[in-house]
Amino acid sequence: MDTIDTISQLLQSSNSQYRLYDVGRKIDKLSKEQFEKIEQNQIPYPTPSQGHACIAIVFWQKQSPQPYLWLLKLPLDERGLLNQGARNHFIAIIVEALGSDLTQDANQQQEELLKGNPYLFTPAQYKLASLNSKIKLELNQAASEHLSPFISYLNDKTTWQNWQGIGVQGMSDFVARLNEKESIKDNHSELLSKALPYLPNEVLFPLCGALENEALPLTLLDSLIESFKNSLKATANEQTLPRQQHLLRSLASNCHHPHVEQLIHQLLQQQSLAADLLITLSGRCWLALANIDNLMAFFEHLVACEDQSLFNGIFKDLVAIPALRPVVFQCMRAPERSEALSKAIGHLFHQA
Image (cartoon, rainbow, N blue to C red):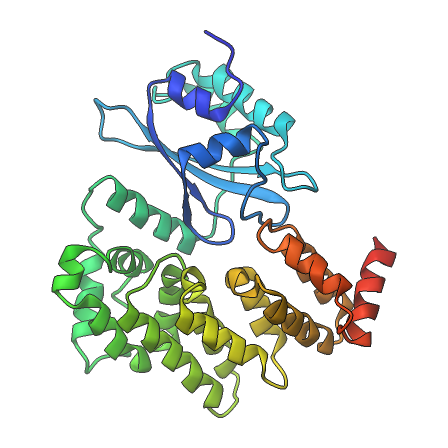
């Protein structure tokens, strides 16, 4: 067997068809060309999550419709580049266990080798549900049996509290197919838009976990924005803030849309913001912070929380994102930054 230097080469040498997804911050497709550049350390990983690249690799043989799935968590260096040693170790474990045939049925010894692979991980269940929906759509496979009950639930407007018969996988399948011809024909976007004000948290929260991974139709996007604005106006109680958080995260894949840009700009102009909303903004809607005005306003809200450890954690997280890194440095040097922000940055580097 020829020397295998990259995961891309490993997949290609086994004659596998494959797709790649980032599964760290949210579920998003990685192109093969982009992944090859990441593996060769030509570019940093675009969406690091706590210092790691979290990647799903779906692969299959042409003669077999059965896909296989690897879920990898590979460390990155301080520049966001892939740790080559860890990547090479992963390859060595796979080659030792499976050789050149990645789709073979592993025997017990091979299974032990694969199970002991330190770079494999299991994402949260809601992420697995969204990933499964995307894979089935990509491979032209039918949605799960849970899709129909969710559509029936949305259509039956008299029983919003009878949600026990619907599942997260059904919601994820519904959301992943919103832009498909069949869903457009059946007005699924409008159906969900009309249901939003009535959905109990038990349905809305996991639904928003699926919505965060998709480019949404305008009708639904505006309905989610309106629901978020209404939640801000609602009387504060123990359920208000979680609802706000989930509605905000549902917009994650639409941060470049003018309506979302306007919403987040207005949000950052408020006199105060809860720490939980700031965490949601940085963790899910980080692309909306990729300009100096928004990021400065965000950091000023963050220091107002008077929690240095929270500031440190979010600052380190944002500066690791290639798209935000230069803007973070601009904020550090901005002469208009407040004394509180200057002190928080100083404490950060003093502790480092």
